[in-house]
Image (spheres, helix red, strand yellow):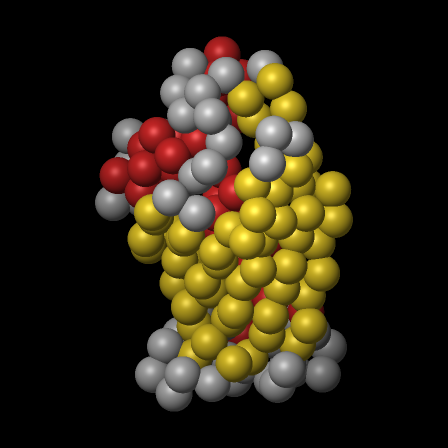
Length: 159
């Protein structure tokens, strides 16, 4: 069961992060042994699956996640896709290393209706010594429609 950080002290520190592989870190969040990011609770999404190079987040935008026109804000799409992309990269980061995002891009294909459950699936396309590239798709959980896509390039750094 995912649990989200309530305070800065709840988040894993650098020492704890570097003491495990990225896969161990992501699985720790998935099991609830490590606190997940508070943004996920705020935006109503959660990590639901993790394998090496592949993760899924499931989320449902609410009225609180809309823009002034009443549509789901682009930031909601960006946050769930960025979370999935980053965690997919994290699953391939070796022990003693960490990553950070160099760039990410989101393409919104269609409006996601408020209250529609969606699944962001991200997959690592390339992982080298110092960089990783991943792609993601945000689909409706029941209709399978593509609502957005995303991509990222990350840098992998020693502790």
